[in-house]
Length: 474
Image (cartoon, rainbow, N blue to C red; front, side, top):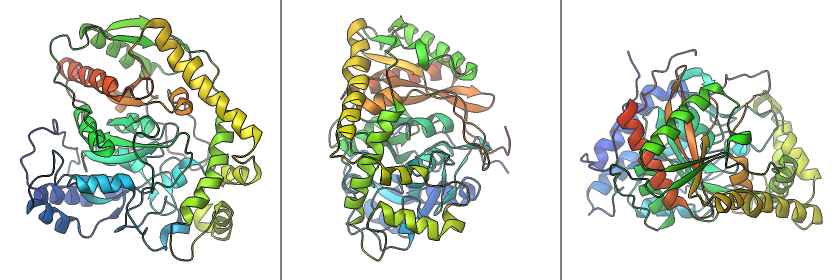
């Protein structure tokens, strides 16, 4: 029996009832989720929600459409765990996250929660992407021995596997971009603050950004419109949809780390050029991005704002990060069997958000990402956007050795708080690879238009990305 995923065309022209869409989604979960563990909680009342939506007048283009929500986003009717057993037995959150309210107000049906790298991958330096104590290990539907990426692993794998066309992820540094690239779907990390984070379990208020993970760019635009209560309509491409657009290629650092990623990205440049874009090569950024500074910012903000979040949860669960660390030590056989909690421990020992060390690190991150980084190169070359390979093909899952990623494109935008749009390019050795479009603050409309034009050119040239076949090994 083949498990090949269906590849729907666009959001336009949905003709099924909500009940039919939801039943197909639930059937697909039952069919493939035992292999990939993308969904950690299924909504028992999803079919009831769907019938209620069918009885209403449509609220918008996504009325009645099923959506999965990452399990670090509060849902009053479903558990919210961040993948941690420390939160698994608590009562459900008292209220929906602000973005979940927007999904429901648009008439969408939340069919369940998607698994994630536990605590959004901020627990340990040697973590296993896609693993959580609550949800288990999410696997890549294109090859079950390959990583689904992190930390929005389940959202990416679910869309890639054809469970749903719409899922919500969150990104602090790479957590939408990576699983979108690994699983062959579209991932949009918006400008920090564009989508509300109230009710989202925090890592960093400076960098956290929830966003859409979808099958097509058009779907991401429609879903972003719901998440922001704004309008990101994108026109259908004409013969030269990118005339007048100038797109830079930051070859230094962000190209050259993977031949499997570079070759499709070179073909993407050709397609962008044929669509009318002017390609500016060697639009390089100054290499001033510092993980030590970023780590200081993330861990200082985590320690404070996780305490604020935990105060909103009922029951007898942890009240602060120290309680979570102690829970993990007591339950080490379940929580620490594969990797530790070194980042949590660093956060407890490191500077807080009132310290000069934190303030200086935050200032350096923002300056490097913004005025001396992305904004500088966009201004120097009069660019609308940058484009680069997203990630190399998905690496092997390994419970013993540390994960190794040869390169990525997310650090400058993470430190700046700026948007990224990742769009699948093709398969390399049977695994998806993608390109990522970068922009300045609030350039989502531009990125979506460029990404949509690229996607149309890709489809005209080589066809839609083939769906996964759930092979055991690549």
